Image 1 (cartoon, rainbow, N blue to C red):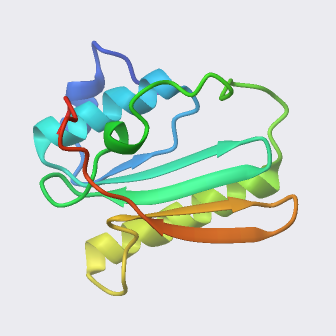
Image 2: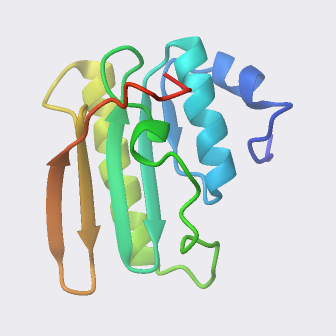
Length: 139
């Protein structure tokens, strides 16, 4: 079933999963998954990339901020552009897979409540704490 997330299918697709791993290229798709994660009370690993940068976090409804808490609006600079460097998408995909494994097995510390950002231009990695937004309309 090769379809992109949209308002008509997000509920049904998320209903089939115990854990959401969001690697959607479009911001609108990411926000739909975030909203459905909150509604269904299912954890979500949020992985994103732009140019040579990537970010990763684990969102747990009721416990951590949701995507809308720390990214309430579509970042105007983030646009879907190609080509995508395989090393960037591959690195964030591998780390997202590890986050999913940690959630499923309970082995290791997840990025719940933390945002990992990195830039492969200069190989800088940074982990910061993220907080719930009391005024968030999603969570």
